[in-house]
Length: 107
Image (cartoon, rainbow, N blue to C red; front, side, top):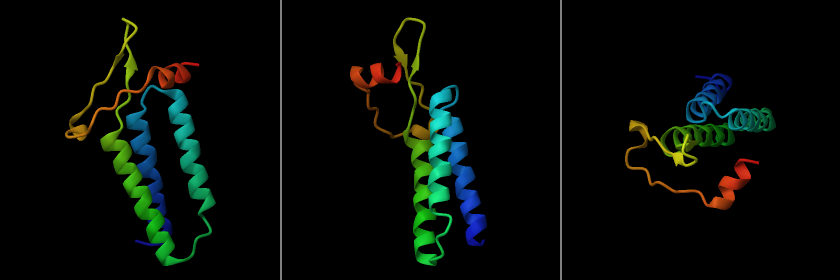
């Protein structure tokens, strides 16, 4: 597969991972898509095969990380947050965000 085709595959994989992980969170979906677009545009002029390979590997790792490590907590009707990990998250460590982080995200 050529560099452009590999880049497109990596780009789409990242978008799919964020759409699945952040489903229902418009802000995270928009911001993650914008960041992915920006990063790919910033590196669109890379011609070095070594550097291109490194960037594509980083994109694959990021996609895997997003899909298999991040679980988004959702506010429930009782005012608390619920986390529902899926089978992709088996073996992952649960990190509860601080109140400060939660308060910032609700602003």
